[in-house]
Structure formats: C-alpha cells, structure tokens
Image (tube, rainbow, N blue to C red; front, side):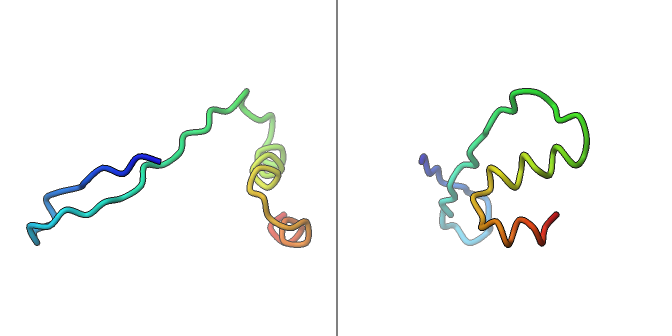
Length: 54
C-alpha cells in the first residue's frame, strides 16, 4: 500500500492517508440484485451477515 502526504489542512502538518484500492469490474451487473450479490460475495463477510444485507 502506498501512503502519500496530504497537505493544506491548515495545521502545517502532513496527514498520511492510504490510497483506495481500485478493483475493475468484469462487466456491469444485469440487475440491482446481481450487483448486491457480487458485492456481498466480494466483501468477505459471514453468510449470516450477507443474508441480513440482502
């Protein structure tokens, strides 16, 4: 992970924030349901939690 300083916060000190990871999608999902399923599969959460989010 690359961390770069961010300046201009007014305090004179730099704040280091991690860069967001970009994950390209293979193809747009056909429906909202398919998009939710894709997200929940990739989120790495327990099946019981995924059931609640559905």
